[in-house]
Image 1 (cartoon, one colour):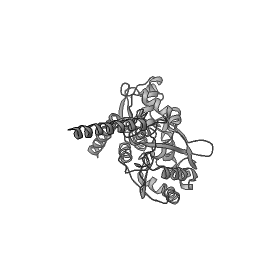
Image 2 (cartoon, one colour):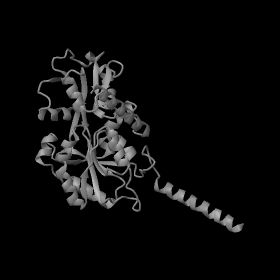
Image 3 (cartoon, rainbow, N blue to C red):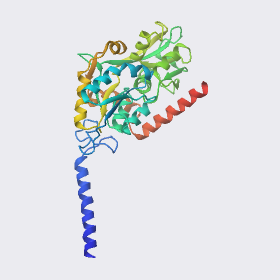
Image 4 (tube, rainbow, N blue to C red):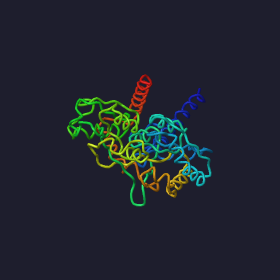
Amino acid sequence: MQKGFLGFLAAVLILAFAGLAFAEECSNRGILDTMYCDNDKDLVADNAPAGECKDPSTLVFTYTPVEDPAVYQDLFADFQAHIKKVTGKDVIYYTVHSNSAQVEAMRSGRLHIAGYSTGPTGFAVNLAGYVPIAVKGDEKEFQGYNLIVIVKKDSPIQTMADLKGKKVAHTSPSSNSGNLAPRALFPAQGIVPDEDYTVVYSGKHDQSVLGVVHGDYDAAPVASDVYERMLRAGRVDEGAVRIIFTSPRFPTSSFGYSSQLCPELVEKIKEAFFSYRYTEEMKKAFDGADRFFPITYQKDWAVIRDIAEATGASYNEEGLQAMIAKEKADAEKKAKKQ
């Protein structure tokens, strides 16, 4: 009887000390998923503990599915070779076809290094333990972009007020320039998405641009850097569309790593990013950027978080599920049209 009681008491004490240890290990989580801690309060997940971190033999890398994934797989091949040289590990490219799939891939541990587009970066940080460390840039500054609103060259639409009653293509629910920023910024221009005009999700920035060119949509808010790349590539003729609105500048897609990787490996990944210089093909594709410029999520993504807050976007599980549902519904609609 006494032995049983002592055994029970020992078990209670073990659980109590384990709970105390856990509380000490995770004194702050903020709005991160329960899998992660943010003890230093920099808004991103702390490195995984030494005994729990991951040191994979092969690193998996991908870039945001904002445009044709195959183009970027080839474009980043030289950078992947550089990561291999610095880390000593093989690196493979993992193709994703949606923002939510990219977030899920890192959360599940299948993705280790990535470039997320501006809006989904917040989901990746809070739900997948993603740590952004860089943006495309040059020696002086990181590369930014503007939200622009385009209409067909011969469209009667001249001002934002003219969008009332029209069909306007947003890209996807999680996109910053393609959806969140318009919802936050347009009311000050006298126009409210979903109230003053009909929102139709195109899926991607390039599809929004081409949809305006072909007359499928009356207008579209898109990222200026995507539009400029399409011009250079000859996918859109110069003068095919007009710009009726230009926003302040936002940071472009972020690059970083999974917080679940071991600290020694993380340091090598950081070294790979900041010692690398872009190939001529990358400079051409990325508007003259020649390197990865260091940033922090806490400071440099503040404007993006403000936009998300203004639009009621939640970088949590509920928000991610809403994004997944919307992406699925949009895909089904497109499949029916084809």
